Amino acid sequence: MAGVIFRDIFLNDAMTTICGSSGDIRTCLCGRTTFNSEYQQGGKGEPTLEELRRRVETEPDKFLEVDYSVPSMHLHYGEKSGDVVIGCSCELAIKIARQWLASRHQIKALLRLCAEELDRMAKEHQGVVDAIGSDMKKP
Image 1 (cartoon, rainbow, N blue to C red):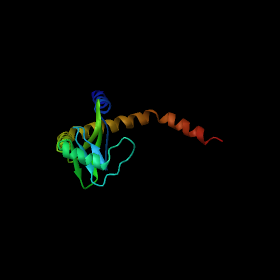
Image 2: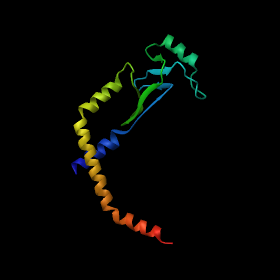
Image 3: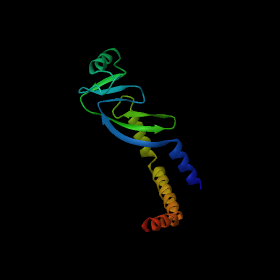
C-alpha cells in the first residue's frame, strides 16, 4: 500500500509528463530564450528573427542565437511546467539528468510497483473485459 501511495504522489504531483523535442525557438524554465539562426516566424505575435537578434544585442544573458535546432525536454513538474533547453547555461537539464541517474534504483522500484499494480488491476477487471468482448461478438 505504501508503494501505491508513493506512486500516486510521484506520478500525480511530481513529474507527470516528460517528452523531448527540438525546434527553432525554445524558452527554458530559467527564462533564457535560445533560437536557431534559420528561425522562421511561426505566427501572429511571435517575434521576428531581426527582433530576436536585437534582443541578443540588448539582453545577451536572456537570448542566445545558435546554428542548430534547439533541443529541449518539456516537463510538467508540480505547479511548474515548461521547456528545459538542453545546453542552456542554467544547466537545468544536466541537474535533472544527474538527479534521475542518482535516483535510478528508486525509479526502477517505482516503475516495478506501477507495473505490478497495473497487472493486478487488469486481472481484477478481466471479467468485465471478457463480458464486453463476448457481447461484441453477438450479431
